[in-house]
Image 1 (spheres, helix red, strand yellow):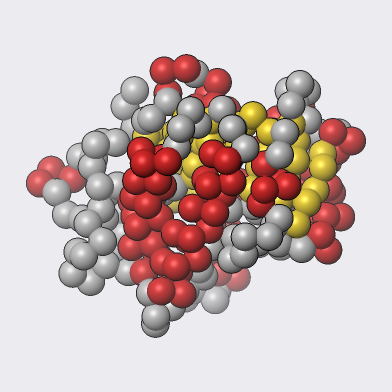
Image 2 (spheres, one colour):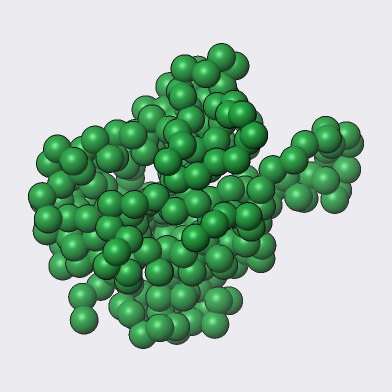
Length: 252
């Protein structure tokens, strides 16, 4: 059985996904920016009730070409989870847009060159529903317009990166299939000891760092449901070439 590659292995979603794959008996190769994170990653996977003996950890950075051909070698399936997520929006949008787009393209090119069967990409609802729409009912057919006035850098980066992914796969994908998961705001238990962007928000509410919370409404999805959708998207033949919203109100 070939290894499954998970990019961004030490992240919030990545650790849950690796643990789920290992519990299912699948050998996993995970990428991290630095192998200095390997011990923390293995500890996180064990917190997820998985045996990390089937886990291989390799270094590959979304900002560089080095390491990606070796990372995908021998893997028939790739879950591309890694993507820059800011705690606050940068003044220069390119600080997010360039690494999000170029990092995604690096992984996809390496996967296509290696003859990977399917890539499941974590995008975001930010690439779907951040442009106003009458009725505000969004489906997988909807796209955020990156030129929407006042659009923040993060949704612009997710939209541009996902558009670039589909364009590349239509042009140069060959036999490699792409499926995209578009989750709303991800929450739920964490396997890591350091808090990531979404869990940092909850901590700020609880410890008083965020003294005032604006009245806002947005979708929330459990991290474990995002992982389940990733696994289903990889397994279902009919999922090829499609996008899937991950939201409590998503329709199937």
